[in-house]
Image (tube, rainbow over all chains, first blue to last red; front, side, top):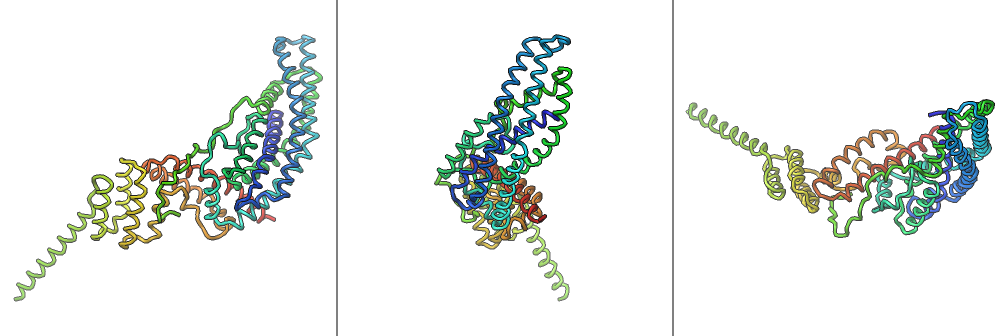
Length: 274
Length: 179
């Protein structure tokens, strides 16, 4: 994937990942055997990360909308391939300037985001190690997974790991549902939620570091492009990719397993059963 | 007199060998009929010296049940295994292992009395591979024999959840070890 595209997508994916945590966290506060996965400090870390992510998302969304309109104008004006047209060159420079602005916002916000994500990752890591790693046997771990979610309808499945491309606001709604179902005692296992957030945060930390390294180089390249008024294919793809993530043009994968139905009370229980 | 004794010995030996061969033949034959009849047949053979063929009989019974899927089949197998435990053909542990492997949502492969960091994480890939194999057996037992797709999908879901949780937990364990 091209560098600017990758940078943008990674950061936006990070925004989504971090933001989703906000809804997973309250769900985690609903008691149960693994409630200690989400003590106050973890919830605070997640909340802080969410606020940073939301601020970044809001800043980026406006810029991306503007860039989208500029791109549309460029296309409708039949500027592609129209070398030497002054009007087209002006639009191209405007797009480039907006693109630079986007990189600037990312550059400003990323250090705070990096610190926040790292803090969340570290606190979750400690809880996972202590609660699931050291205070749980494989047998009790399996029992907790089975006991937490006897039946989850497909509609209530939160979009967890690897489900980018869904409109961010929809992701928030899905996590709100997670909170609601959690209160009703039908939540996905908190161990799964904690694992999911932790793995995403760990990935996000790596991605942020990589993204920060790329931004400076990408910005320099675009500054050079500004001198010539060029809209690169990379920029066009970035706009497309950003739209995909923020406005959800692609639906993610389905739930990891087909929705199980509740097992009737009359089902046979063998004396041999675990 | 000696000749008579030798003759008697030869006759006795012939009878013994013949009985043994007959017994082996009785053990070797395939189980037939419906599940109930096949279980009765298997139990009869197991009670008459064919215990070494238990695994094959169990497999054949599963095949017969697969051809006639029914929710009650899990119960039939449970009762069959309990009877074999009572008669001493197999141990209680073996019976539990077989039943849970084929007819329970939970995985026999994910068991242990020590903490997850020390017991499962060092062999996580192997545990997951074994669970994957067990999931296929559950597909046979829960889905094709018992006609219980809901339970099978729950087992499938549990496998994927366990995979995710183990990945996170073991990564956290490793991070702790590195410090």
